Length: 308
Image (cartoon, rainbow, N blue to C red):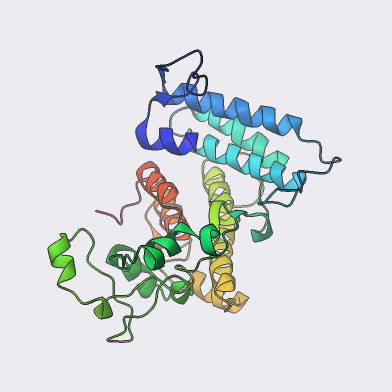
């Protein structure tokens, strides 16, 4: 939460923020100070984990598996480090390599997910749509057009076809309320049944994100195993596997290979991006569906276009 806050706003209260009895008006810390503090907190938390002891019985994320909490902690360290890469390269590289060596996520089975349920435990997106009766959200053409152009296997998992045409149609992004209302809902692709389901898990961090970070680290020349392309391919594959499996129609290895072979996706093809930041950034942005803060932050950090 603190990282999301500082990524969005920069300087925020941090060091004094959770000490209300001492500081009624906590000072604002710089983003550099906050990142350093979060890294120290993660290192301390990881040092306290004893995998030989049983974890908490009410652990809703990992069921008390402390080895998975270690992987989550190291994955979060990798994310902190990669965000520092263009600001403090030496510190970023050292922290990232240490976290990667210690071991982050290695499959979708490691994903840190919040298990929503039914009733008052339902995913807030479900509540917004079906309890608050809000139907003024739709697929954005900015995102949907890319998925359609690339024959993305995740499409049916994320969006429904427009009822009136049985095709995928995105609403023009940024329209005024009046102009948007002029288009009937039946003419626009709405969010899928999966995306609106009460039990859609909330994502703290997933394996796909880790693989894209490893791809970037390899491009930067950091000491990580594997190549940028191998990690990029694994990140894309992990995202496709996660969403299609959750939707009940798992993509096959052949499906994933075919997607990766397209000129606009193939890591070795210029059509997938002029720089590694564009190649990785675009696919990482797609994989960060339903993780809006992360997608927005990566777009600002990697500057891969698309949203102009």
